[in-house]
Image (tube, rainbow, N blue to C red; front, side, top):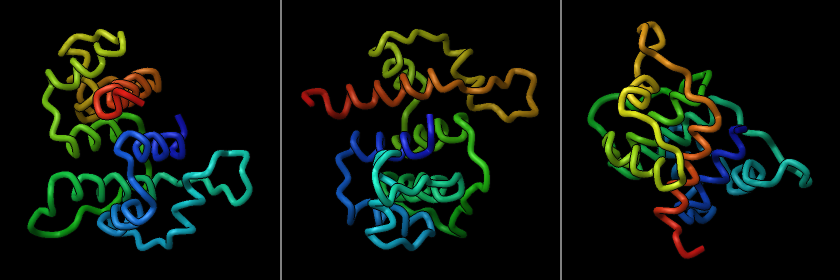
Length: 154
């Protein structure tokens, strides 16, 4: 999945309007104009489409965490320069305050059945021997499960 696909999907799932998207980016430390955000959300073949880079998506996800969970005391988190599916998955899990059982239920609602051990491997540090990279299929199914949970009638 591309960063643009992920951003568009999150916007759709939670029905964020452009001003809300601008605020989420701002909460994550990235001050963008509405037009810039709109260009991130366009389809790849549309005029003025701009692909969102890892650092900007990380800022959005940090802002999403702040929007959903509130601002923590202390220094604001710095957006990662490089993202992978594991980091994106972890940030979504944190933002939505999901426990292991919640994530497993979301995945199984779209026919993806994994064990708790497999799931915990995605959230480990890459230096640990049990770490496992999260493939696009897992992240896509997780986002589809979120769609099913948060936008069931659409």
